[in-house]
Length: 201
Image: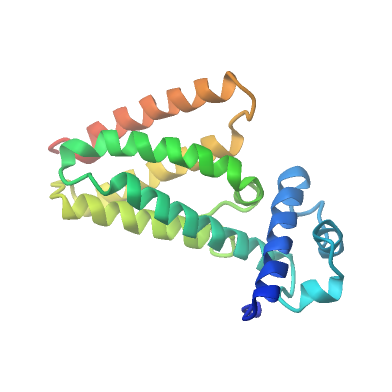
C-alpha cells in the first residue's frame, strides 16, 4: 500500500518528524521492536496523524530508503563528477566510500533495516537503493570504456556495493575503531576494483 504524498509545508514537516523519529527508533530497536504508536509518540504526533501519510512500518521504512537514496545519489554524483577515465575510478571510489561512511551515520535506521531484510530481496526497503546503485556504477564503467564482460562486470559491481553496505551497517560508531575499519574498507575495495573493474581483462 502506497503512502500519501504531503502537499502543504505543515504536512511535509509532519512527515519529516515521522521519518526522523522512525530512523532513531529503528536504529536503536530494529523494526520488530518498534510500533507505529512508538514512532508517533517519538515524533510528538497522534497515531492518526501518522496514518494519514503511512499505512504501516514498511511504508515508513521505504520512505527512509527513498530519503537515503536522494542524499546518496546527490553526494556520489558530486564525488564522481571528475571521474572521466577508468584510471580515475579508484580515487573516485575512495571518495564515495568516505561519503558513504558519513551517510551511514546520518541514516542509521535505514542501515539497520537493510540488515534485517537484505537488499537483494524484492520486499526489502533497500532493494530500490541497491538496484539504483548497481545500475549507476555499472553504467559509469561502461561509459568509461570498461572492456570486461558485462555480466562479470555487473557481478563485480554488485559485490563491491554489498561489501561496502554490509561493512557500514556493522561498523563501530566509536573512534578510533570506526576510522580504522573504514580505512581498511577503502583499501580492500579499491584493490579489488582495480583488479576486477578497471584493469584490462
